Amino acid sequence: MCLFAYIVVRAFSVFYIHDELVTKYGYMLDWNAIPYAGYFDANNHFFNSFLGGLFIRIFQNESMWVVRLPSILAFPIYFWSIISFKKAFQFKSNYLLFLCLSILSVFLLDFFSLTRGYALAWSFMVLSLSLTRTHIVTQERKYSIFALLSWLLCMYSNLSLLVISLSGILFLMLWNLKFSQHKNLTLSAFSLLPIGFMAHYSMQLQKSGKLYLGGKEGFLDVSVSSLSELHFWMDSPLFKLFF
Image (cartoon, rainbow, N blue to C red; front, side, top):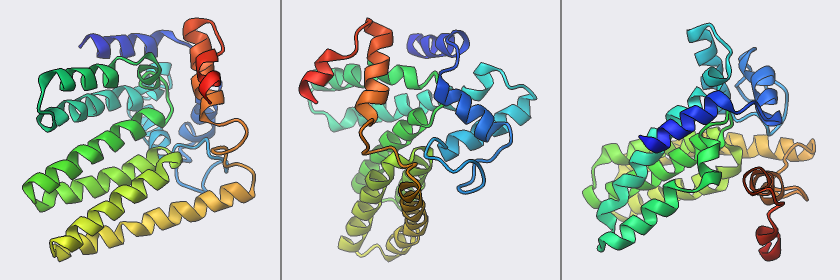
């Protein structure tokens, strides 16, 4: 509860950053969340833009907390998914270390108070891993279906996780093939269609010079370094030392 309260307080009190303003005015207010519908740019984190536009229309309000609500609500999904890994640890001390590393990072918590797709993507990624593990343990089909859906939501929350989502779906396909779960295998194969569509979209972004991931100013320079400067008043020399 304390962590969730911290996220809510920051969502209400910290003013917009530049990318949030682009997201709000470029995609949420006009509700141009579908690929190719709005301004053609990797800055459109589709599922976040869709939910933000939806909440604006539900509450008839475009305040900061409304457009940040998708990220705020993503935290319970993330937290529950982390907790669900408890059974995977033989020793309690290892689980507590994993738990602390997963939920006490100021860099990570900041994303849950901003209207960007990172919080949703990270939450759905961890949820997908949890559901995949549960499917392997129980062999119940419903967990495979939910895991596939979660991997797709992970990708549509943030395009940079396309390869990770594809890897997760391919793993499920191989697992279902190994145990002759043909219905699950067919569903997994169909889930590759939206992956293919987004891969094509990524190529179009790259041709237009709008695919920023992998460029000279990548995740470390733009996200980690800037957040480090805000939190510790230094331009992340530790990260620059190693990267």
